Length: 213
Image (cartoon, rainbow, N blue to C red; front, side):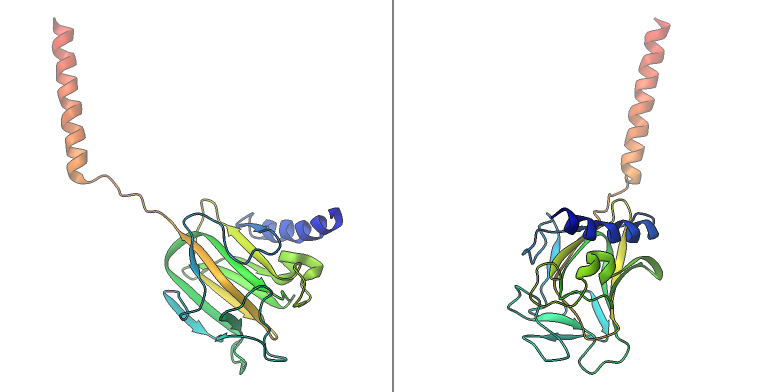
């Protein structure tokens, strides 16, 4: 178990260090196929793409097609595969429509040639290969819990607004993507600021009268 933990932790440290320690990457318990993060929105692909926009080289599939894609271990419904069985760019881009600070993905039969990248606008925030995530277990094993894992990316105070999945071979299979959008804090309105100013002025005048007495 210690060797397994070391094998998983070392590449994560390298990857997060290269990305200025953002995001923090963690693996859910073996066998988990969905996010447990409170407030996260899950995209299960059962009714289509589910993002604000989806573009590029991908397909929504079920089951297996030899040499093209394999159903992630523990998933029994429609899922996402990149690239499309008739590949073009080998990458697909999924945009959220607003900024988020968390992303989760059930990554099936993780391969070393699978890549996940996060962007904020046109700026690359972080990028990871399958090897960065699970080290030696990025071997495409379709029946091992070591290479079929739910992966969490926590951006802390930073954010992203789109995710690119790339695979230089068949294939990058995934399901149950999850993201948690940033909660916007409404700035004080002009009326509120005026009210606070009046209250402050009133208190100041009252204090001045007391001082004179």
